[in-house]
Length: 210
Image (cartoon, rainbow, N blue to C red):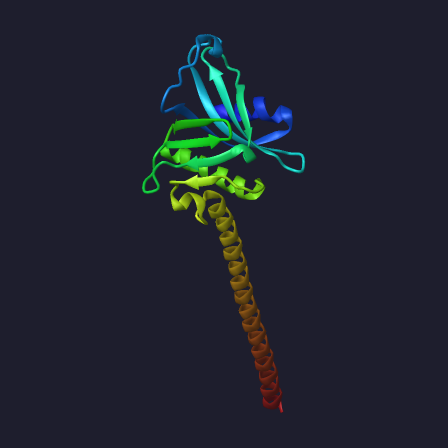
């Protein structure tokens, strides 16, 4: 089982939530944290996750999840509601990059994702989720590529792909129906011609006998 599937199963499903996206990150600038604050558990992996409750009205959360070295368990460390999110900074609007910042009411973190693609997917889904669920005021998305915030997001692209597939299938069925209709018309014409030929042949045969 992948780490992201495991996080959804262990952290979110027990609370009747579903995880929408998760990105593995590292801090761009390390914080000076007292040894006791970390519990002395050594190295760890960090994931930033976006989740939504299954129960209506839906509530969206952004959660920091960690997996400590030597443990298979995933631990929820910090959590914010999407209403507490003030700004998402994509760092560079002109090129793909793995860096991004998240600013909340009471926290500010500078992250670097495992890849630019993972960061792009995270920001696309986070932006779509904020537009769909978040009340006013909505968080500010700055220094983000236009493709991450506009109609070319993966979610819209997926919807467009489905719509296109349905349209193509419908067109194919219509064209097939038209071909079948024309074939039926040709068959009917051939049958009429055959009947007329048979009647004419019969009349000629009877005339010949006479």
